[in-house]
Amino acid sequence: MSQISRYSRSLAAVAAASLAGFALAACSPQLENPSTEKVDTALEQDADTVGVDSAAETTGTETTTAETETTAAAAVSEVSFIDCVSVPEQEPEQVTLDCANPANAVTAITWSAWDEDEATGTGTNQTTGAVSEVVLSSAEETDEGMVFTTITVDGAEVVQ
Picture 1 (cartoon, rainbow, N blue to C red):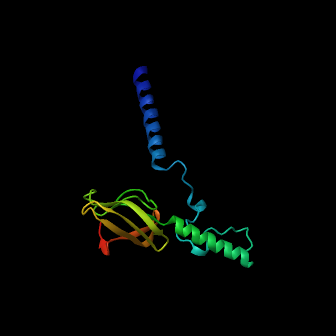
Picture 2 (tube, helix red, strand yellow; picture 1 turned 180 degrees about the vertical axis):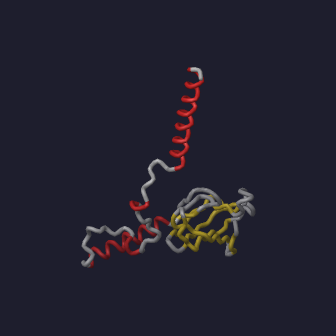
Picture 3 (cartoon, rainbow, N blue to C red; picture 1 turned 90 degrees about the horizontal axis):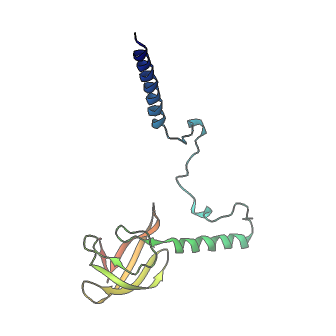
């Protein structure tokens, strides 16, 4: 057997071993933890523990009241609205009434109320040109946080 032939076979064997090593490395995520070291993922959280400082003293009335007010304020400020496929927003200037026809919307909305249960405002209905009342309600927890899921315009529920 010639020297070149042996060299070619050795080179092919090294290349095959390297390729197999790279293929196996690609099958496992780089930072994967062994099963025995995995941490349980929290799937739920008790609403009473949101915003609670574990180092705070929870037996005093003053601390409990402050925590309750903080939690309630956070709930109000965190309720948003997702207009069709946009990002969650609080007090949007526009609400689209038909996602297939973005021109069908209420614009220039002035919000008179916005809390964890309902948001109420008035704006210009682009279809009719009239001033319309918009009510957002039915807040639900989503991947994007708490969002209003029901739109009512002039007393009629709208399905986007």
